[in-house]
Length: 65
Image (cartoon, rainbow, N blue to C red):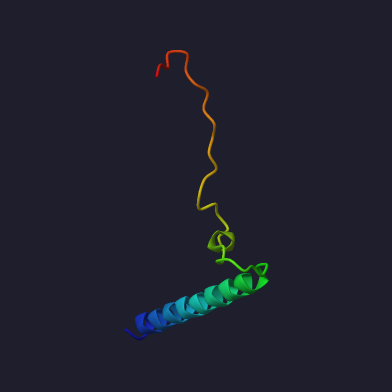
């Protein structure tokens, strides 16, 4: 039981350290954003695109309005 308790404490400490690291990283990214008078752009904080770019589709020859 002591080994399982030690593993749980180690896992919890690892998760807490990761959470603190993520908060510090987010604050660092926020501070590096250019200063604007308008609202902050939160999409630049993500490593992944939150909104995909639109792909223009060609109209099919059978398309009628």
